[in-house]
Length: 186
Image 1 (tube, helix red, strand yellow):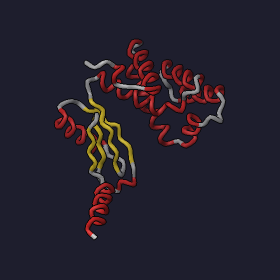
Image 2 (image 1 turned 45 degrees about the horizontal axis):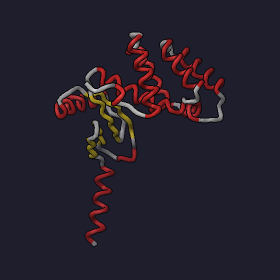
Image 3 (image 1 turned 180 degrees about the vertical axis):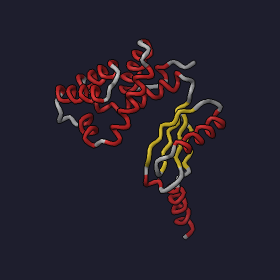
């Protein structure tokens, strides 16, 4: 089995791996994972939260106070709250989205799953995600966890990346390819 260190890299990977190992050793993996899922959703929905984690204009103490309050209000596990405080103290909150992604890759690997990044033109329903998981599992031969995001510029279709493989069936890409082909015909 591949070492966890080989799955992630860089600063996001180091912090994600540290959190993963702490959560696993303290048997809080599910709680921390749940906290990070909520935090990821909050980051995608709140411009103010994004500003807080990414702006260097906030002091360490302002960021530490804000993430402590966020963890408290959200009912976050103690380990998650301490980790967020450490990120704020070390001025690493801007890396939070990448750290969450690294943590997700590590938890997926730990469960024996492949991680798939799926980009669609509109939000996929639970049924659509379940069907996509089944199709990916039959194509890859192992369970798949899906990291779904929305890019309205795709117009329709999907972009799916699993490991180093990428399938782009978006309408935008098809139109771009048609545009390139039509230029050659003139």
